Amino acid sequence: MDEVVVKTEQVMPVHTSKPTKLSRNLQYIKKNYILYLLIAPAVILTIIFKYIPIYGATIAFKDFSPIRGIAGSEWVGFKHFTNFLTSPNFMEILMNTIKLSSFELLIGFPIPIILALMLNQLRKSSVKKNIQLALYAPHFISVVVVSGMVFLFLSPVGPINAMLSTFLDKPISFMSDPDYFRSIYIWSGVWQGAGWASIVYVAALANVDPQLHEAATLDGASLLQRIWHIDLPTLKPVMAVLFILAAGGIMGIGFEKAYLMQTPMNSPSSEIIATYVYKRGLLAGDYSFATAVGLFNAVVNVFLLVFVNQVVKKLNEGEGLV
Amino acid sequence: MNNKIKHPKGDRILLRINNILLTIIIIAIVGPLLYVFLSSFLEPNAIIRKGLLLNATDWSLEGYKRIFTDDTIVRGFINSILYSVGFTIVTVTVSILAGYSLSVDGLIGKKAFMIFFLFTMFFGGGLIPTYFVIRDLGMLNTIWAIIIPGAVNVWFIILARTYFKAVPNELKEAARIDGASDLRIFLSVILPLSKPIIFVLALYAFIGQWNAYFDAMIYLDDRELYPLQLVLRSILIQNEVQPGMVADVQARNELMRISEMIRYSSIVIASLPLLIMYPFFQKYFEKGVMVGSLK
View 1 (tube, each protein chain N blue to C red):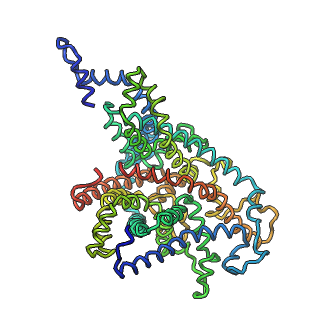
View 2 (view 1 turned 90 degrees about the horizontal axis):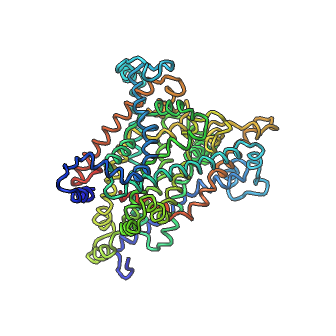
View 3 (view 1 turned 180 degrees about the vertical axis):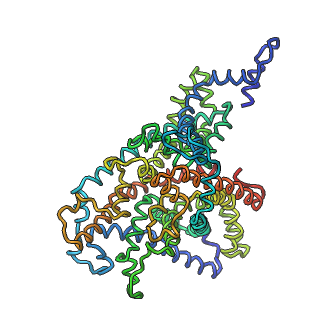
């Protein structure tokens, strides 16, 4: 950027008044207007579908009335937030959200790394390729289908209960028991996503110089020692970035699968903020309240991201996301 | 790794355990898929009841036949193709254009644009205000609600920008010396070089839209407009049997048997196309993931 600016400055005759930064910029934009035309569709769509809704979120501080519109509705300050924070199910929903996503992170984050380390031990690259192909398959199935498979497999008359029937006298109703919801949610997620998530790590490990491993083996290092001292340090930067993103998204845990796997019976553990916002807002028409709940979630999420980024930076010798 | 190096005994045991574990993992991944596939051609629970002793009477195509007596799934399939293709065209076009612009050295305001886009990745107005915007634009119950609002994908823009940055500057300079305009350079120098990135983004966009149900659930009420995933949701999750599929069935047991078979076969119909296709595109997917991880 600077180079171009400097050049135009040098071309300017000495006598004329020095152009201001603004006029230089305008000149640049005029000359390169095509570049701005190219980016315009993305900018306009982002304004309409991302930034205007942020303005619309002001209804969280209003009593939204469809007749008076967003601007005309009356300001009520933090009323809806207080209502949510003091409502009897606030703690349950908040804890459900935090538990579901932090357990998911705790289990879902290390498994792809372990998987990549395991795949890295395979000598034959053709075998490795085929195994990876099989591991990726569930990634291409929709969350509706995965949830549907879970319902089919775990139904009281489904195959899992049929297999368990030798040990149990009556079938387990997995999907209507709140105790099972989190495990089902998390492990079906691992089944679907761990293979795909391991790609990045497998690729990073492929960059390790084989001579390092040979030298270490000659020096008598065991397999576990080599993984610990050679492989894991290689993965550390990738791990740091992915961990920040994953941990920062804790409050943003996906609506899609939780809503599909939710049944009236398991809602004591499956009702999370996202599903609650949908039901109270779009299904029950409680627009302002639901927007306030969503906003609360979004703000907590931003703070979390900043916090996790700082912590990882400290642990990772100053290398964070930003 | 060099095989001449003698590995300690402990390592050999570990490697053997590793192979066994990987085998178990593969079975756990592929097993359920295989089970669904086979079950879609079988009477309910036939595999569990009989194991490998299946005989001719256990096989049945009734699930598939039932699906095609009703046009819900077929219509869903067509809608999904429409939505996925439309969404892919819009989102890839928008991302490639923006990505190119942001890749140009010296673009004034580049940082501001990046912050403008990145901000939306971490903070947003939420479900209801977005719904209001789409409603006020008159997009409810139209294809536009599916293909336009999600078209700006910041991740795609970053991928495209990273790709274009790697295009040698000399190519652009040479064209400029020949008197080509910025637009000319983009159309005849950059675009022909961008087939791989366009292909990667198109694959991601198509698959993402094909497998999505959330936007359709929120913005579409008209069942005629339902994409395949919403139809599947009503069959698999909400246990609704499409009346057209079972019009002639009276007995409750029979109804349960048939709806069970319909579930398995509808899963296969919805998932098989992608599962057959992805091995051919595997290297492109991996490329996309890698470019993204390099920032």
